[in-house]
Length: 165
Length: 379
Image (cartoon, rainbow over the protein chains, first blue to last red):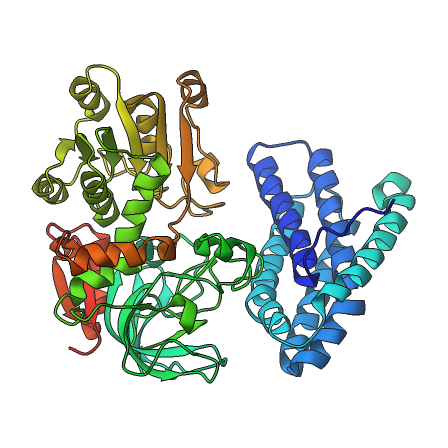
């Protein structure tokens, strides 16, 4: 028995990622204000990084190229990719940092702000345009779902950086 | 065209911006003749939302259709229309059920779209000469024939009248019941008006602003001045120690105590105490998932220290959220057409668009006598 696909379309699937990550950023802010120990903050930060990495990959491999073809707006799609590049640099920085330095929280919060802006742009421009284009967003959901699961499994199998050092 | 543009906290100006235009075949273009400043505009004005600088505010709009897209059937050029502040598509699972405030398609990532509102999609506001209305056939309320002379009444159908009515619906107000309403701003006053319409036996309105409480009294409501903090006790006296059957929250997350300090849980907890056991509370005041500028630690995370124990112990229930304007605006328009209500009695100022910045400043300061402002781009 396979589980039925719950997402209406590709936008719903991608935005579910956005919402999940947003909740984690809010939780991170709460941990900072509550002076939570560095390791619990780091665990959450690394979960955020991993979720964003998977999300960015499925967008870049599957969603963006097809949307680019369908909506004919290269400037918009190039802008989105550029934002991904910025986010990835920050993610790499956070993943390599020790969690007890003063700059750690600032970096995570900087990432949160960047993602907020990126998500807003995606929702208000890319998603709306994709939905009113002829692109088959329902079929695309299955591809995204499959690839997301693959990437998540791969990440789960690989021990995280701080556990190996 | 001229439009009221948000530039940053407490900074707005009337600027020349590109004309609004038909962007999709289902759009309608409206020349705005009346557009209100709403209390929720002030959250954005004060920089307490994620509103991006450069955007046009204004979600309480009325005007004349000057152009329709090729896929618009019902609405014609020349029609006088009032626009619900929510933008709905008409065909998603929520719009189908009349929940157009939670449209699933117009604002991906969130349920619900609106004009000129933070987090409600990319749509420009109507405090401008022209407004693009998506899905025009669905969103336009075609106004009755007397709409020109009663324009200041009909424009209230865009938001505050349906929103006040929605508060009483969420609270489940029925004939003969007692209702306590926190907030005597325009929405609270409209909730009081709606409770009176529904035949409530007692309508109690709690606030600290004397000019607003006087308006509540004009409606036949019992005004309760909470400046000294005795509001809940007064409700208890008036209801024989039981509390009101129903409660309405019409203030929102920036509610203040008697010292004008924000206490985000104040009205919610007062309602839990002022409403009877098994009573129901309707919350239309705005609360947000996060409020980074808040002083309070919980409020920053969009949380409240809510008297949940008391709430549970009293077996109360609650209904929340923005009004689905389309679910109410047509029947409420009949009440105006047949002179059963005159929501324009709330209006304190009718001003040209050019004076919008001044109006924002006065309204934001709750300057005495500034209860509701209609901007008239044609003046």
